[in-house]
Amino acid sequence: MANGDLVELQRNSANWAQIVEEIVKLERKIFPKHESLARFFDEELRKKNSGLLYMDVDGEVVGYVMYSWPSSLCASITKLAVKEQWRKQGHGEALLKAAIQKCRTRNVPCISLHVDPLRTPALNLYKKHGFQVDNLIEGYYSSDRNAYRMYLDFDAD
Ligand SMILES: CC(C)(COP(=O)(O)OP(=O)(O)OC[C@H]1O[C@@H](n2cnc3c(N)ncnc32)[C@H](O)[C@@H]1OP(=O)(O)O)[C@@H](O)C(=O)NCCC(=O)NCCS
Image 1 (cartoon, rainbow, N blue to C red):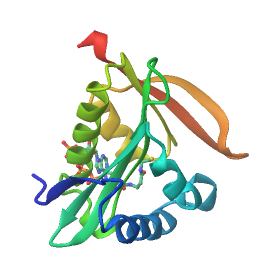
Image 2 (tube, helix red, strand yellow):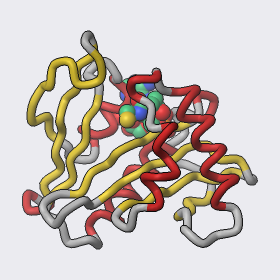
Image 3 (spheres, protein in one colour):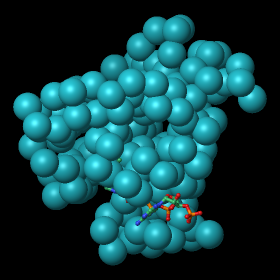
């Protein structure tokens, strides 16, 4: 079970810039350029219909999940990552569960996401929490990297 504090990044919080900077650093380290949101993080997060939760262990940001609800049709998990040395300790699962709960409160019927089929840990995690593969989108991330589009349908609960 994950030990740490799940924190919702607040737009007006004094540590906004510091937390975003830490997350951008992680994003650059974990994801290849074509899959990275690093350049857009600050901009994305300032949008009214998006949120970010992070896992704080003794003041260290060890993982984060970003989600949005661009319309009333479906919410979206836009990013999920845990620092390499903190993986396999339940943090990813805790972050995903919390993001699902947050999306539920937006009264949307579903959550969608995209994931590279080669990202087995993420794929397993999403399946474990009820996401189903809807479609393979060839060339989604780059010419040679595809994505599964996955859905979690709340009505199916
Ligand atoms: C995906 C990721 C967030 C999982 O984080 P984590 O903290 O290690 O995950 P957890 O410890 O909470 O594991 C939860 C579940 O994920 C799956 N999982 C995690 N690591 C796995 C691995 N190495 N192999 C297979 N399944 C794995 C399992 O279903 C696991 O449940 P179980 O413990 O009951 O088997 C992490 O591996 C990561 O950051 N990967 C790189 C970034 C990424 O791929 N992000 C998703 C694309 S946006």
